[in-house]
Length: 248
Image (cartoon, rainbow, N blue to C red; front, top):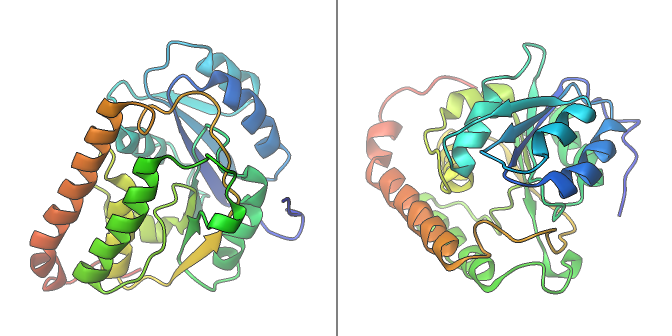
């Protein structure tokens, strides 16, 4: 599935790509993104030992290194290098599991002023067989339930492929630096009353072994951080909700 980017203004959109030893995948992904009139593309190297830097620089994108391990740490580092002209921020994994050609359609509702935050949803009809592991399926059942019980909003997924206005992202004030990054963003978006939309996207088997769902240690750490994030935000919800938030 592809879409034409010509009628979507992407010149004020930045793509942040956290990456750890993803050189082969980046070699495919970055040329795809170069065909779009993006304002900025940032590869956040989370301590790679392969040619991730060389691939990024050969494709003319911004490469930064974040030595502190953690998905959130890499995403946060990328945010610190956004150009002043950027108004929309897209987060996209480097492993080719998400169809990057859908980026214009993901961003379109924000460009058109229809919403503040778009989260990809990996619906069964668009998923390649075997593209989601058992831990991913379990998380997609458990954590939307937790958000619905704790915050009253019905999400269907925690897809890492997402777009948000920079103003909203700044207002959220992301704190997580590990695997709770995606769920923190979704919970805080609900708390701030952002206009949220879910967008179905194709999902494919990732290239290479997952650093999270591909190992027992990765699964346990991810589950721990996501549960910890949910519980921590729920316990402190009243305090946040009773103080004035920065307008978005």
